[in-house]
Length: 395
Image 1 (cartoon, helix red, strand yellow):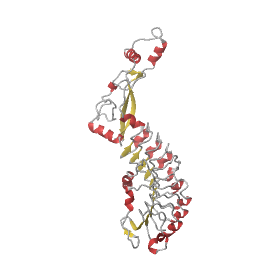
Image 2 (tube, one colour):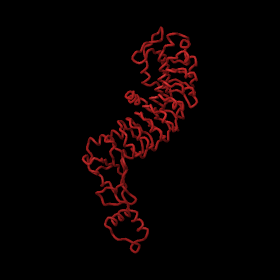
Image 3 (cartoon, helix red, strand yellow):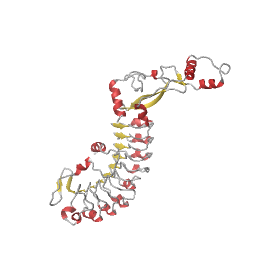
Image 4 (tube, one colour):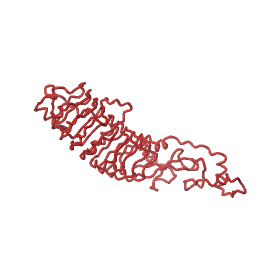
């Protein structure tokens, strides 16, 4: 399941103009050939019996679906995606008590009836690209304890649905492209979740309890308003994919280096934008150049020789962090990116301040490793290592 989730998560991109009704490629995953006489088909590889009413421009549930029929009662998968449905009648849930999968994505559904709690065997619920808001989900949804996968992406949710915290068997949760602006500190109840997709919302911070999701493998937080992560992120020992692009990160918690990631996306954050763009170097003023010479030559200057304001200015000198350089700087410096090892697989950028670009061998950035055999702290960067950095930073 985790491997499939890694592939599936890549299709959950953040639409720039999501109207909530665009069909997605993954809708085809559940499409099967429909028998025109019985509207049922055997699908042994995925479901025992599937009833497909998708892509029929339905504005309401057909009466034939609501008629009592022994064959229909045994349906395991009901596909109603890509229609124009506004509501789901209570009778529908009473007719399909053995459903394990309900696919109603790409409709205009605004409300779920409380009778959804009758689907005690339901494991997969796909409701992406509809019109659900915070009042659309009934409290009775908490009774669907067999649910393993829920997809409410592309709706109008402003809060993480509290009902989901009561569903302790969930393994995959997709809530991307909503309007969620707050996450409650209750994620410790989702200890079985392997995939959590929250991309494309308005989330400003992540609660500490996310570190208690011990089975989490894929975490997507892209396209939010995050500036930092809780230190508990390092407790996610099974995490393999972490998507943080399109946020406001300028730093990352040091403990993040404990993660054994296979995928890390940081693009379009201040942390990376500052790295990718060419860093300009402004020429120091004559005042600063003269002050640098005084400090480097260790010339004696006190209140009896120069004005006090210049003595104070000289006292504000900062040393260049390059151990091979004895230079100093005052108001003007060269910003440099130094990389440190990330579990031997990734490199995390740290911002340094140098007295001039000549303190590095690269005009815009310098990459270093804790492995002295790989390169010197300010030496040349191996070609293969440079390619690796580019791949990670650009996603």
